Amino acid sequence: MYVSLKRSVLDPQGKTIQGALQKMGYKGLADVRQGKFFELTLDGGLDRSQAEAEVERIARDILTNPVIEEFRYDLEDK
Image 1 (tube, helix red, strand yellow):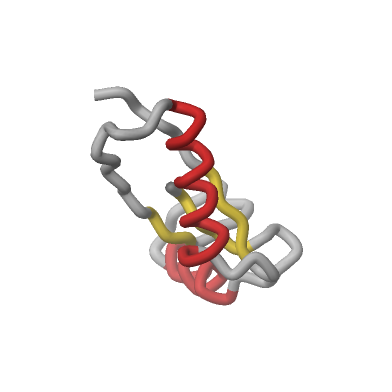
Image 2 (cartoon, helix red, strand yellow):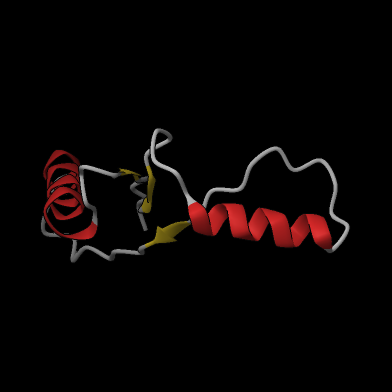
């Protein structure tokens, strides 16, 4: 799961990273956005629809601040 600031929210850490990269000579950067990555492993007791609902609930209730952050995720079968 990827959690990042909404595009409408200023990302000062991303701007700092962008400035540092440019000072180091990296070219062509239009923007840098910083975020968080979470890897969740489910126990297999849910069908795909239930798993999606549970992951979204975890993201909304615990892992993001919905006022300033958004999330996206991918479910992988193992």
